[in-house]
Image 1 (tube, one colour):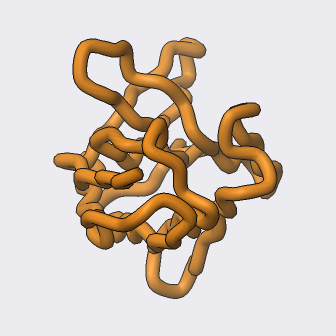
Image 2 (cartoon, helix red, strand yellow):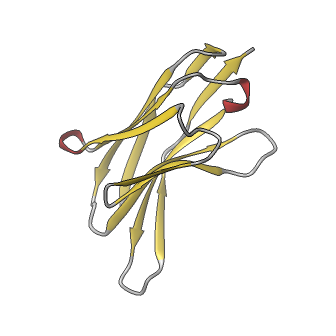
Length: 119
């Protein structure tokens, strides 16, 4: 199992910044991707940014504004969010993905942290 604990959410005005943290613990065997997803009320969960074998990918909606980074020594992944917009308002979830030997995927999720951007 992998345990993920997010922190850093909050209320911010449009144009402001927040940094989310995701502290991971447990068995990291087979974990090949970590990332951030978000879910706004009434909408499906969507990917924000992921890192796989050192390659970082961003959703088009956050490119140039959000930055994913990781600190391996602390087993922590960060999401620096700048130039926040009201449409960034959502619950943000940390994800870790394990690729199993039969090519299936096992996903682990944190409890989520709320980000609210006021206009």
